[in-house]
Image (tube, rainbow, N blue to C red):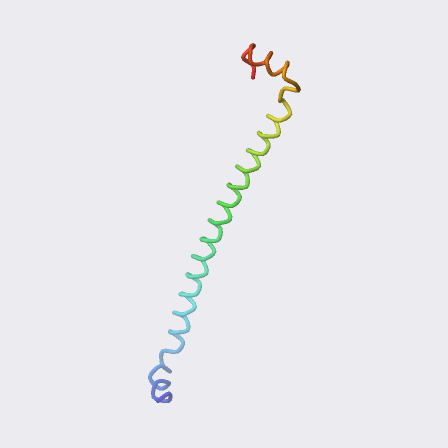
Length: 79
């Protein structure tokens, strides 16, 4: 049985190998593009997270030190 299949495929072995190589290259390209998209999304999410953390640290550094300063800022409208 295997010998019969081998005889039928022997003339087309090089063409089949080339076809499988092309299919493999296309699949590798698509998977690489997919991974690049995931990495880009991950970088964008990390950048947004860092910006939020930076904004939180800035806000914390400008916080009122005591109740009097808080009341003064709220009266002035600078809070």
